[in-house]
Length: 398
Image 1 (tube, rainbow, N blue to C red):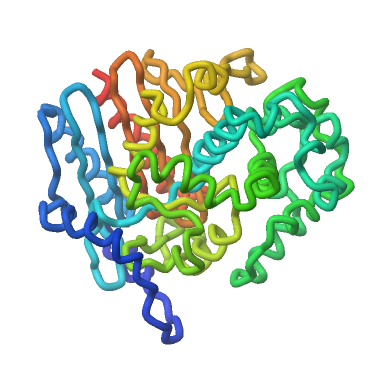
Image 2 (cartoon, rainbow, N blue to C red; image 1 turned 30 degrees about the vertical axis):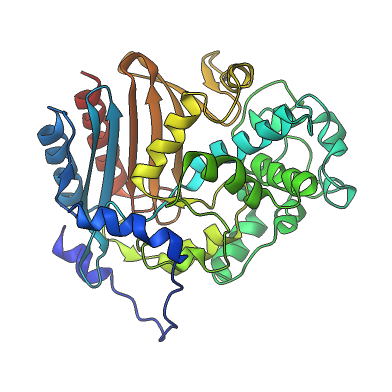
């Protein structure tokens, strides 16, 4: 890590109460990982001959100025994972595989699975208008809500405006970094706004869609977060994955610090408080934290049919096209072709983190990477990250 980055990363904050402890029944999992020696600069190897090459690339990433990174790969060769850099620059806490990473928009895939479980239980029809399920007190904010179906929310073809693009929202977020937004607040920012396009006519990725899906799931199940935990976390044994299980879950000591290049000069600063408050306010489109092991377990469980029926998975992988006519998105899944190989999964980015989770069916390969560096602001570090990320693809897919 560059010395200049480490020096600039410290921030003055008032004394705080000790962070909440995770539920006792979950602690043994992290202890097992710690006892196995899966610390920064150590790896868990199961038959992969590419480990040393991947390690060199990750070392390069940290040397370029990224605070910390974790990588996990599952293939026919076995499972392999490693951590590099720092989880917390300030006290030089090394990044470890037991640290919790922000999933950011990868959370959308979990939200989509929960909605599709409701569909399998015949509690929701994908091609019915959202006004059938979203209470009137909420859908009245959405222009043309009666023209938008649940499926259109799932595959981002609704035409509903993006709350993230509203100057009033962005200004308030930056001026009041400690403000906790309620789900309804996001709809107020798009109240009276025209639909961006005719519903169902095109694809435009929009966070608002998944905020609304969470509110629909709340209306049907009573608590969308509990639903996600019940239909995904429990069946797959994701004991190191958390989402609104208690008010302080984003203050667990295992959560990494977050950093950003605020001035786009290649020098990182601590953005943990802003990151935490922003994520704490988000529902459906963000909010889940997890370990590399659990991230892989989730996508593997989904791909192997442990969560949804074959017919539902077929719908989930029915892709809509982008403006170039190329496949891009299903129901909560991103479609990509990387180095000639098809992949599906999702990526995520935030003020203080960035991550990717993908499965390459032809290679039988699952891949998860997470950085504790923000990827939504402009930074010369990002070009380095993308170049090095592509090197990882080259190694894994050759």
